[in-house]
Image (cartoon, rainbow, N blue to C red; front, side):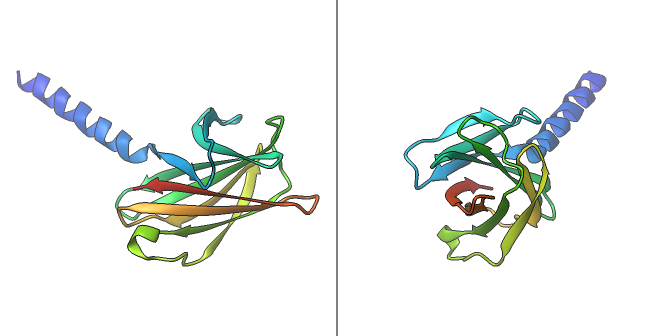
Amino acid sequence: MKRTMTLAFSAAILLGAAGFASPLKVRTSGSGSQQVMLCPDCNAKLSCAMVGDYRLGLDVNIDSPKTGGAVIAVHVMDKDKKPVTDAKVKLDLSMPTHGHRARETLKLRHTGGGRYEAATAIVMLGGYKANVSALLAGGDTVKQSFSFSK
């Protein structure tokens, strides 16, 4: 009986930890359509929106629940779902429901396959808004807003 309780307790701790490490649910805002698709590199689910001839996706993962350490990833693809690897991607993160404006603009670096990443801290509980801007090689800029909650 004691062993069964210990295993059940261990499983509960592992499942709880997995919950903290899992991606936050993200949705698009300012767009009538939203798709959830798989990243071509890692098969992670991400929220995507068509912006002109491009597809922007956002994925937010909390690495450390205690410190709020997080990795924000933006996926940039063309209309044929081919990765765009030469964009300059920026992101402003704010908490409009708390009245907090973006404290800084994150510059994301390309990590491969059209995926751009930046590390940041997402400490407070509540709703966040991520305004993504991607300057493409041809000079076009595409923008999309996403929202998520911690």
